[in-house]
Length: 511
Image 1 (cartoon, rainbow, N blue to C red):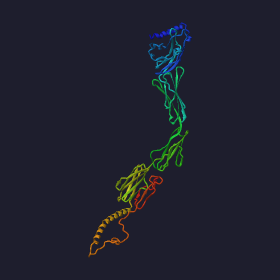
Image 2 (image 1 turned 90 degrees about the vertical axis):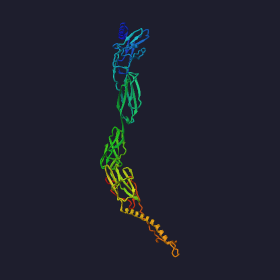
Image 3 (image 1 turned 135 degrees about the vertical axis):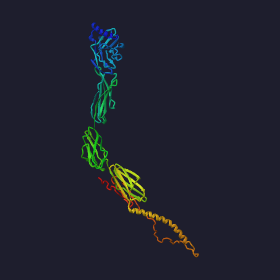
Image 4 (image 1 turned 45 degrees about the vertical axis):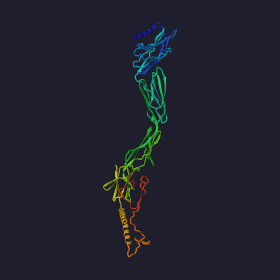
């Protein structure tokens, strides 16, 4: 049955021509070719004309056939060739002389050519075999057409558009952007069954937009294609900073680099310290024989859009330990307090010691590059105490010796205390003996022991002291933590301060 139907249509066409029907009025308009994407849908635009019969037809039947006379579409689906069954729909209104055909999904074999046939109930029938259309089926879609002004200054407005062509108005592709702004979408119908979808994007540019702007088109079935253009957002240098090696040894040379984020790249640089500009105009500068006193520097990067300045950077210089003036031991009767003030970078280890044995430190304080290590202990008759400081670059030692006169003073104090104790013991005993001797009766005579004006012991009005008072000792050590007067304001009275040797008495004597 299905194979007889195309032959019957062919016979009808011949018969219409033999019967002398005015074929000049039987016309159809279709594009010679349309393009479609495999897996998507396609609509073949079609319009037709026919001689107006009298009476008017009561019913129209539209049929599409392949050039091989396979029925592509028929209202009775049983008459449709199996390969097209369920995939074709007549979307045109035959009463409005619109014979457009939809095929979905489109197969690679759906190339055609195809033609339209009209059948009027109880009237004429005609095949428009001279109006044929072919389909160019592609397996992948074309990339979107992306338009944008690529070069713009930061803060300027960027306007971009992305457009694609498609043949299925009910299922247009989805257009998306790599930018977060919401675009506007517009669709319009073209000729030959083509539509154009356009997405327009507008945003204010920032430095972050200095990258690829991507437009992606996604079609039915998950097929994706994209187009991109790299934006050239121009801006003055930002994030300007001075970079330097992390570890710099005192006395060596070091190279500093000025870096920035800018577009275009800086064409010149300026270097400064607190005293003013430096001669270099390059992105790097070399400092010879750096010391811990080397001043902080900053740089300025300059391009065609402007300039940017870094914050100040002080080179981190490392050096061996130096024990500073103000390191000393003081004594307050039986308590000895020793301070060891170490200037170093990086910090290392500090150890107090007596000859042959280490001493635990009482307190350790850190103030910038200074470390103050305190030793406190009860009085001990030792000659010297040492402070030993060491780091990766070397070591330093301070020896503190106790003066002889201070040793004698402590001996006098000990002797005086002993004498005072003996006197306290002897006074009650002596008083008791005198009382016993003077209170004895002789020949009935009574001896008065004491009168108001009598002095039994000691005729002198100046009492003799029985103890040796130690001299007053004061010590004040201040201003360890400032740079202007690092070790000033130090007073030590008498001989209570130990004599120390081996420290660094000039603040920067090694430079």
